[in-house]
Image (cartoon, rainbow, N blue to C red; front, side, top):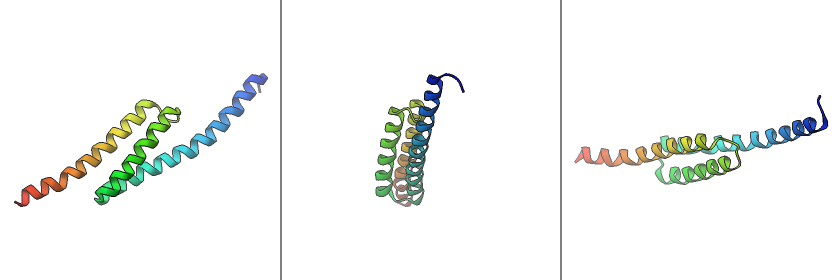
Length: 97
């Protein structure tokens, strides 16, 4: 390998990769859990899970685990899903009347 600074940088990158892989996996799990609750129609649990996922996305973006625009896009899509799911029962009730 190259000089000592390159060796040190490679070791540091390896440590960051291991740490980020674990954190990214946890992030994906939280987002997936929120999406499952939205699909199941459990509004209260979904709102809590979405809040957790949004917080985790913000932290990941702040720590540069994911790009800030990637986090913003994922938060936007998640919140749109939750808002659409919340609007569906109201629309269904109006049609019944």
